[in-house]
Image (cartoon, rainbow, N blue to C red; front, side, top):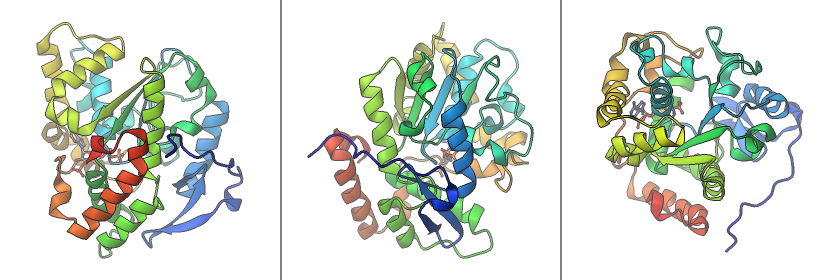
Amino acid sequence: MSNSLPSLTPSSNNVDELPKARFWEAMDICQWEGFWFEPGLVKPAITFRSTFQARDDDLLLASTPKTGTTWLKALSLCIMQQNQEHDILTMENPHFHVPTIESTIYSTKPQKADLYDASAPRLLHTHLPHAVLPDSIKNSACKIVYIARNPKDTLISMWHFFNSIIRPNQEPFPLEKAVDCFCTGVYQYGPFFEHVVEYWQESQKRPEKILFLKYEDLKTDPKAQISKMGEFLGRPFGSEAEVEEVVERCCLERLKNLEVNRNGSVLSNVPNSSFFRKGEVGDWKNYLSPEMEDRINQTSRLKLEPFGLASFFS
Ligand code: PAP
């Protein structure tokens, strides 16, 4: 079996010409560069790819949705701001402090950092796949931290999130069909597997450039993972107590109960509270039938085994 991803014919930059589909019978999506997006995200992604000038001290966080993005943003903020008395997480939701580049068009407030102003220090995030990142990111010394999560928990997290956002007054989208969409990759930001593989392969080639984290490892041993992040980002911790403070500040229960996260929204029609749910490893067991589990396991094996990643996510 080949252990490289198939190369794709480049997509048109004209959104009207892109292949279209319906996502969970609720919204239109289009396929750009092998991944599915709501049409409004494609132009910002194209602009980002063609105009963004990375600086060597930029830090880019990356993830496919529902794999721990909010947690990663909170942790990175704390690590980069070590030793500061005030707690930035009490002031705004992590998605305000660390904007998701292609989604900033839906921001409800002006962003602090101008993405295209090279003088601003930047901590940024993207859900975009590695292949479409600007060359200046790939070729500069700027670092990337990627977070991945077990596909079954990712799907269940996504099912809860998108049901509340895109189908607010409707029945939840049937889970069986959501499993189908997940496995075929035809959903907002899909496919999951190719996204993970792209960043994984890059992290293997350039470990000094890309740190590949797993949500489950962060849950099992947050101190070890957070120390690793500190080292990677050039902000090593001076003591275990400092690491523990970051663990505490960023824990789900605390963030969920902060005033800034219980109310308001950084992105229009997305309440800040919707980013915090259970945060449990294995929550999929409460939802997936044996047939659905089997379907995802088979797809995981097919997509991840050639890259030595299948057992990683079982
Ligand atoms: P996004 O990609 O839309 O930003 P993202 O933050 O990646 O979402 O995913 C949300 C998941 O992370 C939720 O998982 P669940 O649905 O299985 O519960 C959410 O609860 C979890 N999460 C958010 N913040 C934290 C945190 N501080 N610690 C652990 N898990 C968290």
